[in-house]
Length: 337
Image (tube, rainbow, N blue to C red; front, side, top):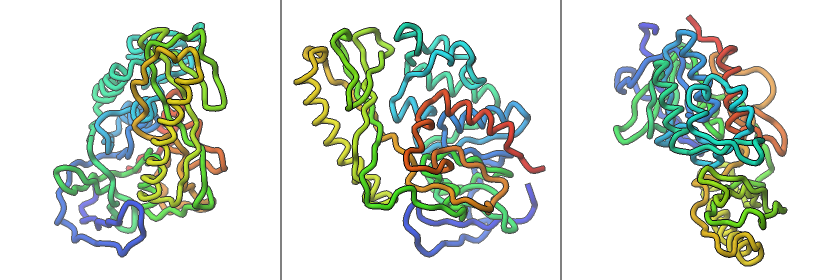
C-alpha cells in the first residue's frame, strides 16, 4: 500500500447528506488487502476465491453472519443439477455432500447449514479473510482513487484498505458511496414483484400444483418438505431504507395471507405445517448503474445494480448463475500493482 495517508469519506447508506471527513490516522485499520469484496453472496464469494487463487490478498466484508445470501437470507436452497455435473470452483469441494438430487434429477436441494459451512471452508482454505457483521458505511480515497472501505459493526467503525473493490451488495451500496452514477430502475413509488420463499413440511406432494402465486421446489428434508418460490407484489415507496422497510412490512402481511389461502384451497397442504419464510425479499436493485464512463477503474459491481431493465435481477437470485458470474469477474478484475 502507498505510504500516503488516505482520506476517509463517510456518508449515510441511503439518504444524501453532508459528507463527513475524518482526518487520516484517526480510524483503526482492520485489514489491508489487494481486493476487498463487499457482500458474501455467491457472486462475491466466487470473485474472492478466484482472486485469492491467483495470489491476491482478499478480504470479504459481509453485514450478515454467514455467506451465501441467495440460498441463505433469501432461502432459495436449490440449483440446477449442472451444479453437480459441472460445478464452479466455489462449489466443487462441498456441493456433493451438501445436496441431493430431486425433481427427477433435474435439480438439487441444498442443505443450508452444510452450504454455509462449505462456502466458509473453501474461502478460508484459499486464505480469504471473512469479516462478518460488518456493514459498509463509507469509502477510503487516496489521491482521488478508491482505496478501500469503512465498515461499521459492534466494534465501531474501522477501515479496510484495498487496491481494488468488488461490490456484491444487493443495491450497489459501495458503488453509490464511491460516487458512481446511478439511475432509478423504476419511477417510484411503484408496485414491484419480489421473491419470497415459503416453507412447508408434511405436504402431500402429489396434490401440489404450481400457480400464479409461484412454483414448488422439493426441499432437502425429503418429499414432504416443499418450498414455494412465491412472487409477491409489494409497494416500494422510495429507494432508501424507509422504502425497503415499508416493502418488507407489506410483504409479510401478503405472505401470511397467501399461506392462509393456500392452506384452505390446496389439498396437498391440508395437513402441512407452515414452518418458515425467507428472512429477506428477493428483488432487483432499484438503483442501476448509468451508462457511460465509470468513476473508478478499480471497482467492479456484481449484483443486479449493474443490470438495466425493468425485469432485471432474477438471474442474480440463482446461486449457480451468481457463482459463475463471480468466477468470470475474478478472471477479469485487475488488481493494480
